[in-house]
Amino acid sequence: MATASTPAFLSLDAAGHVAARHQDSSLVAPAGLYPGASTPAKAGETISVYGVGFGIPAGSNLIAGSATQTAALTAPTCSISGLPAQTVGALVSPGLYQFNITIPADVKSGDSLLNCLYLAVPTFPGALIAVQ
Image (tube, rainbow, N blue to C red; front, side, top):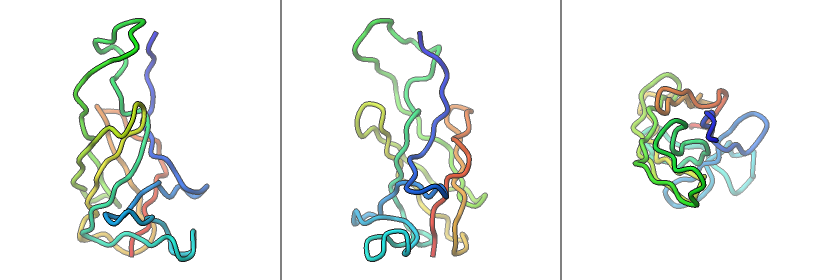
């Protein structure tokens, strides 16, 4: 039987920095987290973030016992530091989702909270994106 779940972004550290990549595939994170391999995102940049729990919601037309399920993927509505962020979603593999999120132009440098609503359910709190 399907149960409700809370969508969440994968994190790189205990602080909550999300697993994210720049468009050139390099790692988005504070520069000191992975020295020489990670850099913060920039305002106006589109980055890819990864999460779980964005699948077919419980109570949908799930087929009991079926090895496959289908439904349209709805991108979450996201904000970064309280500012609306354009978000486009894609399925990477069963259970793993990629969302391309554009950092709002007015976001200040530092750790910025990423908050999203997926089908009226908030993502797990505390997700951070390093911005410079």
